[in-house]
Image 1 (cartoon, rainbow, N blue to C red):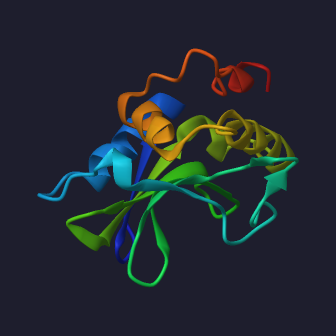
Image 2: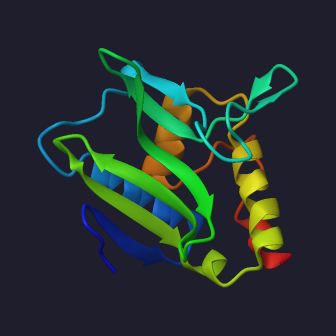
Length: 155
């Protein structure tokens, strides 16, 4: 599936979707410097600016631009047929965008998908932007983090 400037591809797992999203970010000449990444928090929806105690619920990583923090890859949830998915912008051409869809979540009920999405966000708590980037880029989660993919088996 493809829309105006967004390519939509389906993936069988969280790791596959996150790796595809990060590869999309770096598919041109411009590569990400992990030391320049910052936590990106949701700007819309029920998780807008989420704070849980002292811990921020981040939804992705971004780069500081002249005017604001711009997301380069983030995880989203919607009811438009994409379910839970990673949104990514190609750093060499930010008009080129990817929605890397977690295929198993498309047919889930909105309630189950919201619960799972909350677990995905919770897994990002207290992680630095470069740690999130490394996890998503490689598909290897930090050892101290519960695997959000396990939530799929329970639903």
